[in-house]
Each structure stands twice: as structure tokens, then as C-alpha cells.
Length: 258
Image 1 (cartoon, rainbow, N blue to C red):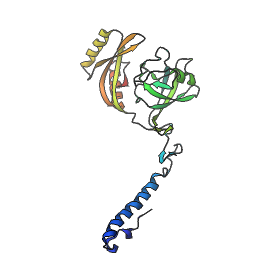
Image 2 (tube, helix red, strand yellow):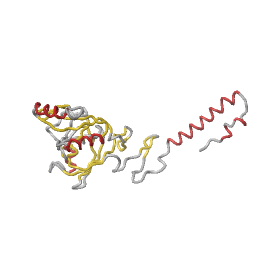
Image 3 (cartoon, rainbow, N blue to C red):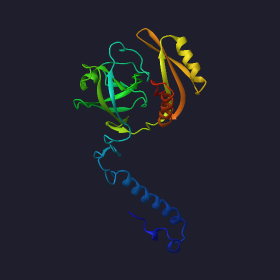
């Protein structure tokens, strides 16, 4: 819809005080109707390979395709009754019967689709904890999520993790994309039960790297002292530092979000 230029052309405007007030109001009224009509329209064209958009109220939502943004393949494990009832990294209480998982770097609150590549079973879980802190493992599933994927029996399985985003408040079926590659990242180099061993490694790292520090973590009545270095604002920066540490002989180094 276009606004006829004769409505606002000065040379054809009658110089009358009432009209000088009415014409701008009329133009704004027509513009408001035009904008309102545009706001209620769906996306002009669904992007290739995207699910069909849908509307909740006056807002249109575009669901994400499987390959959108964050995707990784690796080994999944699960954790159960030993952690049931404990506080997670998000502050929520861990419920082994809920559909949740732990991940080292994805933002807390992110929903992901996890597919067991060995049997093609898949499900969605919310990331509300940090882990697994074992090299080569990419996600720790709750017991129920692991059972649905067929991981609970063998204990581990090769999976694909695809990030969907955070839940839309208007609909459980819609997700809002988030930036999976920006935040506060650091590199975990080692974990020790003995604090002196952790402090010795921290001091050695402090001579070469910034922000060498120790983070305590309680598990099964034991306290682990995690030695970490670096403070990166993007996952790319953290992965570069991780590679440097590995080349320096710290084979167990991996990036985590703090």
C-alpha cells in the first residue's frame, strides 16, 4: 500500500488551520493501518529447509531447522541418583527424572535435540548444568533422557547435539535463537582431590597464562580442585587457547563456560 503524494503536496493543500491539524492526523492514521497490516503478515517466504512459520496472537514465529547454529557429535553419558536433589549450575535442583542435561559451553537454559546415532532415537532436553568434565564426552543426560535414547543401559553412546534455542514464552513449540559462541569461557587443565597438587599446577600455569585459578567442586562427599586458565569472551578464542595448551603437553585441557 502506498500513500498518495497528493495528500501531502504543499502546492495543493488548502491553507486552513483545521486542515493543517487534520491532514497530519489522517496521514498517521493511514500509516498506522498500513503498519498494523504488515505486522500481522507471515514471513514473505519461508527460508529453504525451514519448518513452516506459525502465528501466536499477532506474532509470527519461525522454528529453527536441525542444522541451525550449534551442532556437534560426540559421546553422551548420563548421571543419576548420586546427584538427584543436588543443585545444578543453573541453580535448579537436579531431577534425574526430568528432561535435562549438562553441557560444558552451551548457555544454561538452552534446549537441544539429542540424537543417538546408534539407534536413531532422539529427544529434546534443557541444558541446566555443566559437564561432563571428561575429555571426549560432550553431554551428560539425565536418567530419563538417557533411558529414552537407549543410553542408560550401555552408559554411553555416540550422539549428535543440535541447539534449538531458549523456549519462547508464547509457545512451547517455538525457540528463540541465542548466541552460542559468546560469553565467558576458560580452559580446564586438570582436576585434583589434593589441593597442593592443584595449587602446584596453578602456579606453573600462572607463569605463562593469565587468570590461572582453582574452582572447587563437591561430588560424592569429595571435593575436587579444578585448575583453569584464561578468560575468553568467545568460544573461538577459548578453542585457540585450548589448542595451545594441548600442544604444550596439557593433553586433558578443554574449554568450559563459567
